[in-house]
View 1 (tube, one colour):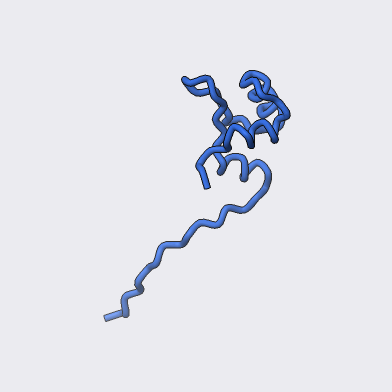
View 2: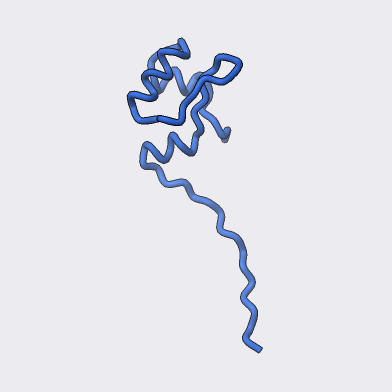
Length: 70
């Protein structure tokens, strides 16, 4: 799974193909971290998308070794 939404996902989410229209719609919907990169493409991080939509992101927990008291 990619760190950012694909162009196809952005079109499906916003209903627009032009980056300016996509950004306007994303900001209107609360995706404040969406931006246009140097290549002119809209970037929306998947973690931000999931957080705004209320989806829980499961993160792997580190394995911790517990030392016995000496």
